Length: 77
Image (tube, rainbow, N blue to C red; front, side, top):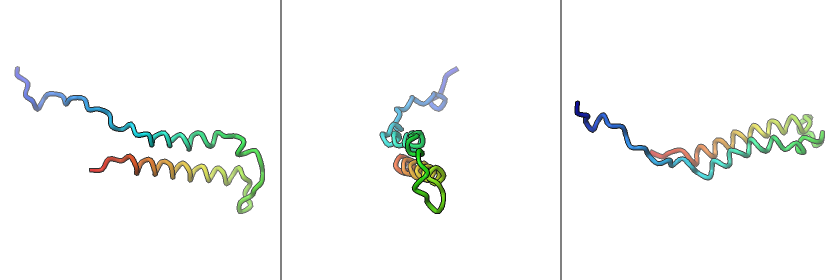
């Protein structure tokens, strides 16, 4: 049986998804692990102790970082 060019597997493509911007995704992982950030009750924000409003800030940092990296690395076309 003769194989036609249509049935041949495509040659492996080189990986072009190795952007240095992906290192920014470590920020939302590492920053919440910095325990000294939580080691106080003050300052309070809207009556919330630092621990609670800092957790909300980490969510915003994570979403912002992920959105930025996605927008900068998505393929055009």
